Image (cartoon, rainbow, N blue to C red; front, side, top):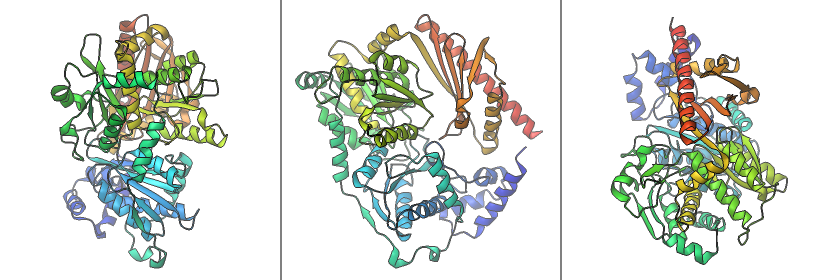
Length: 578
């Protein structure tokens, strides 16, 4: 059954909001759910907290939603945290194209300024990596991005960055949450700082955009001399969809700088539109987002189709397979291609590039392909695994900087389509990734090969491995409460084997709430709650004697793991309701 305390809390909080000056849409929602206990519970059972990537939730009424009151309270906490360290901090604010993003950003900017903070607000929807870059470029004390990244259209969110340009770490998040907890959801304006202490909101010029694009050009990795590369890029045909997001103008500039022969934008997905009218979930991990590009824009000469998500920190790609049909590459496949290309270019010692050495380090999330470790070993560079969330890769980059080894960062990637080469920013960069995949495709095409041809060569070298990523999703907070019980059961050894194969659990990641196990046969299983969406994610990496056997092993193991999770959650839910 529903937790009694949480139900009492939700009813009390719902009643508390009755006297708030709610915006019209929230007032209507408030009245509409008056007799719906489940709806009240879902909206008020808890406060949003910082997850893998900031505060994130559905737009709407309640403490468990994204709305003006929740963001105002969060901003008060961020303000208090910053003012405790500096008398006059500077904060940058950016936003993507989602519904309410610009309004939320302007409200946050005004609230910070009234609290005595100097605010620099971007003039238009801007990619996440540009905010991270700008914080470092301008020497700001932090940043806030209004976005829900790749989530469905009904979501929005609030990412907070520190003065290094990194998303805040867990310790900082907990400190800010303590500051937030000191505030109510509706406080009188007189509680704000005195008017003479108020900061200002300054609109940033496009000089930051230009500086960021120059940084991308400085991180242009060529596999050969400039003249030969220019000919190959002129022969490349690319279709691009920004999925109605903030990456459009930036990727267009990259295409122009590269000198691509043909570059087409999917017009239906080119305008800034937070309703995402052609795709319910603007996530480049899904085949559906490429449908219009395939149907209306790709032709016989098209080599690749690329997509960036609304805040342009993720990039997905489709390419032709051996049969000439377009297939989407997984985030792992793209990351492995990029890692190999980055290492190859440095090994060739192209102009301005450092030669490879064991000090140069690749960082990837635990849930990303173990083949990356084989590639790094082959090229003689180091590789380290980190918990999920690109902020953990950024933290490792900062450690290198503090050791005077910033240039030893070689490449970072996550299987969820996040990639970074270079140290100009501290978050995954879909614009840089678009640049990099175009270079790789052009280099391979000049040899008469496709991206999938290169992947075939890599598996012949490193062995046949296939991955399956599945998820069990939740529709309400009551269902999601079963996740904690699931993770405890896994850590307690309640899943000793899968498909007759013994599991060898690695409990060192328990603190990160991630269950990771090796299986007989060289397979790997990872189960963890998503930090950005209401779901449990299941990752399987399976080996085989050839591609088809590895694929079959991956499907069977993933199916068995998903069945276990479904069965456990259903039984747990029945127990809670009895």
